Image 1 (cartoon, rainbow, N blue to C red):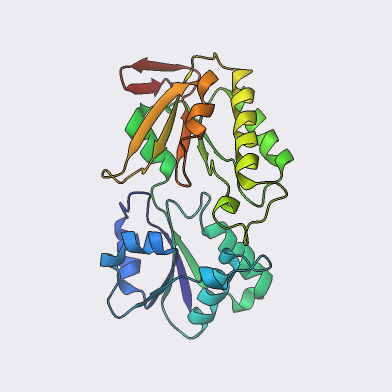
Image 2 (cartoon, rainbow, N blue to C red):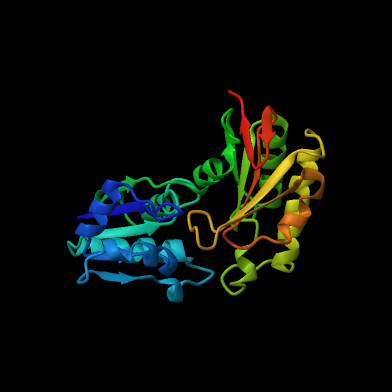
Length: 265
């Protein structure tokens, strides 16, 4: 019995190994947005679905996907779990291993294979030039499982390091799904406060005119947008962000010319 976790990449530029796994799958589970981007790679007779409607605050959607995938794999079906971007970076791989350990003894695990996909930070780097050539840190600003203290420590460390940064999850899931991701305050207010903390931490180590970029619709030419602002005015970018937007700050040793920015190694 086997279970394959694949990354579709943010622009659905899948690798040949991911395409092969999808073409062989009998059961494909994942968010409908991601499934739509790779539907032509899935056999017509394969089952294709998500389990978002089964999620609860006690059993989140990652746990449900893992449980259902393991149940189907136990019947002998070739099961593929689909993750947007790369499954090992804010994707499905970590939650799957965590939940398998929680629900099954090791001897009952399916054989788990992880196949990578291009991540949003890689698309962002290519779109902007090479802003992370000297190193990159990836942060998730509003990850539901992270405490305010943990987010603050991560932000402070990255801001002081001088490496480029890409910030995911600028908006909190609780804005769209308050029933599944409850917050002690309005989710939008929480997200804005965390972004303000991010801005202020970077301003403590970078000039106010450091260029920053908000990228939305990465990998989709028909909907892609990129807007910029100096770090001191970057809250304006946050107000224009959506669930899939990423915020980019180049490394401190960057150079800029017209609409291209790059960092030195």
